[in-house]
Amino acid sequence: MSSFQHILWLYLWIAPHVLLIAVAVLMFHKGLHKDFPIFVTYLLFEFLQFCILFGLRSFERVPISVYQDIDMFGRVGSIALRFGIIQEMFEAPLAHNIPLRRTVSKMLNRATAIIVVLASIFIGFLYYGTVSSRAFPPYAISQALNTVQCCLLALVFLWHRFLNLRMSPVVFGIALGMGLVAGFEPLMHALKDSIPEQNSRMVDLLQMAIYHCAVLIWVYYAYAREKFTSNVMAAPLLEVRRGAADLGRVIHL
Figure 1 (cartoon, rainbow, N blue to C red):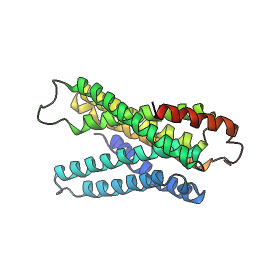
Figure 2: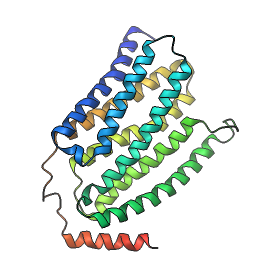
Figure 3: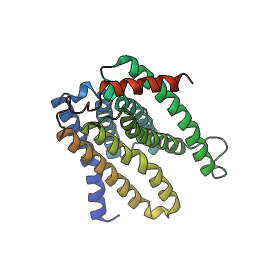
Figure 4: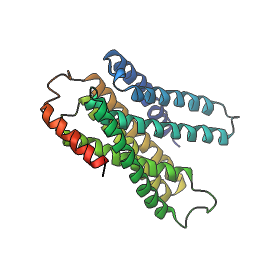
């Protein structure tokens, strides 16, 4: 790897994780941490994970297996937190309607279970015959879960459309950034498996560049938050109640 690629790799690894703190600070400054506590936790978790991995990488005597185990633990934690963030985005327009929030939670859990099964079957067919029969590779499982999260993020937009409510800039920014992170990761793994090993570093650079773009999106929408008052609740209360009734019928089918 050339010196330029090494500098670019360090920048794309360090810069976005430092910006995560800027996003967290903006969330606290604007009071958004009260509405999106899991997202703020996710930001801090990602930064902490980066600090640990960066520290381990600085010590040459640390076994690569230890580094990989911690990296996998971090991936699992990130995926779990992203599921919580998606639920926060579903509940964002229903902050003052607890019964409807419970209905939405049930609907989301059912939709997630169905999509998890479908995504697992799809990823399983992709890797059938190419993986060890003893264990399913962890990265294949993460790809399935990332696919599930992309589907759920699409449902977030449909959900706001169903309620006829304008999506807040913060929710839009979080969904867009998470879509980049979760959506491109399976593609990057597939691309990495299809090219020679010596070119895999370029795929890593591309993946980190995409993550950098996602963090910049979070910074922008956290900073450019509009006053989310009565103008956001443009739909009449009657329409929201009708939506709640429709959801209730769906849940009890």
